[in-house]
Length: 88
Image (cartoon, rainbow, N blue to C red; front, top):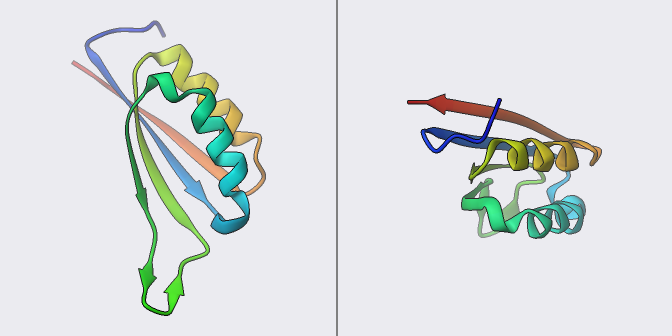
């Protein structure tokens, strides 16, 4: 697959043991920060509770970079990713 301007690439990232994985995940996100258009993080939180797991949705520019970021994140134990490609 090639980089196409008419595609939208979303990388969904499921993080387990969120508080321990943050430094490793953040390092990968910084490395590929130039291709992350939007980043949305979701996890349960309340006054007395913060979920150990979470989900991130990343809007990525460029198919090859999205796949490189996905590989970098998949190397981290406890991280699961899914790449969604919408073509127009």
